[in-house]
Length: 399
Image 1 (cartoon, rainbow, N blue to C red):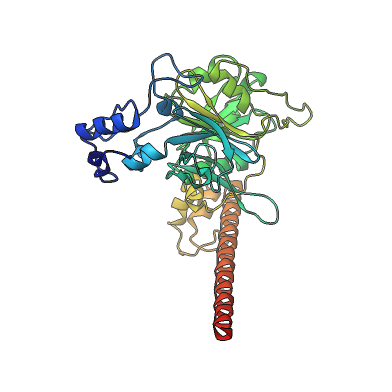
Image 2 (cartoon, rainbow, N blue to C red):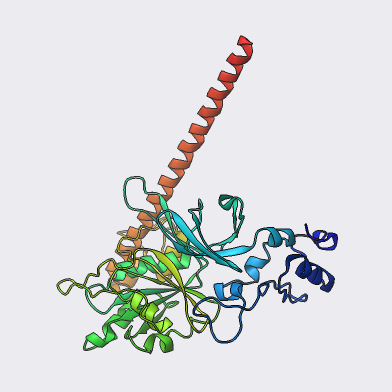
């Protein structure tokens, strides 16, 4: 039990010096809290997990801990349920790391790689998931079309594609919409640039997707990734490599780590498609202090509840649509359509309008499907309560 002086602290109140000393003594922690800012992100000792830089950083800082998460925790919670991060997702288990904690636990409902948990040692399934900074998710393929969580608490999404047959504008737009909707910074990374005579056409097509997205060309091997991606790969930042199999995601991770610890395979020569080498989502710790998520290839990417992200990708079309004569303009044959006029002037390609329509239609369908499922679940719940109530009434009458 914590001292009374600490227990009296309100959940989100900034601790004073007395509180800090009391908590440090009670929990045996190396408290390095700034009482002026309430930054509890350096709560742990200075031992470092694999791949950390030579400068001393706490275990939590190495894992990406920051005030956003610390400010969600009360003092009592911190002492009784230490924070851990999910660094790997396997079929039925999760690999978690925290201060003095390196364990594999059963899959936690609703959790994904990158999540922070307040770890309940006695009842791991009761561990609380801290509010996320960001969440990448997609609609799974198949008949049930359930939402699949990809990763949480990502700062930058490197959308990786090759300068070959894998390059696909529509797929890049989907990935960018996914990142925009999750409030994650997207960066397009064009790999295998050393294998083509010129990359300018690829760069121009990628840059035309959105003015808000940077485009980087590189050779995934060697030192280029460390240099060209350094702007986003800073200590404490969590970045993710997303893209199809064979585009170089694992090779890029190896390059940042300075090792060859992750297995890679060559693509098929006939169609430039990759083989599924990476089979799980895992965080890796780069020597400079950055955290990298390597993911299995995703060729099919169904968006889920991503209207905001779609608007971000097609901001140019959204802006033009506000200038149409009619508010419900479908941009087909209506008079005074600013979108059709821009196409006629060569400012917008018809293919881009078609892709926008397709994503909007998909979003409407997925949203309707979600609403329908919720309605069915609500109706089912009402039926269960009605049957239970009737059964209880019969039992009471029989008594």
